Image 1 (cartoon, rainbow, N blue to C red):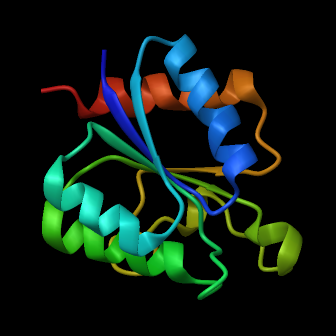
Image 2 (tube, rainbow, N blue to C red):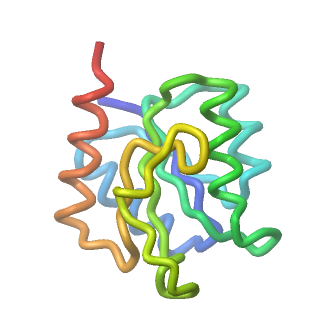
Length: 130
């Protein structure tokens, strides 16, 4: 069993993702802001982070958190789950993953297909295993 931290300002979406993750046998914690995420990470480092991009306080807060997580915690696996492409026609995808600009491990577009989510989480945790 792995521990996952879900960071998403939408409680219903976060709860749905948590249900999928617990159904896979993982321990899950949910926070609804990037500030809460940093506090939680200081207390207990999860095996992976599932992170939204847009938050009410800043539409790019998830990008900033990903950069801060990389700076503080190195290679903690980050799966970005976001609807940013629905809000802004920017076309973000896995091809945009970059160590400085978008330092995440993988990227999944919302609305999330839960079968794909399970697959991505398994890949994320398998590739991070020592």
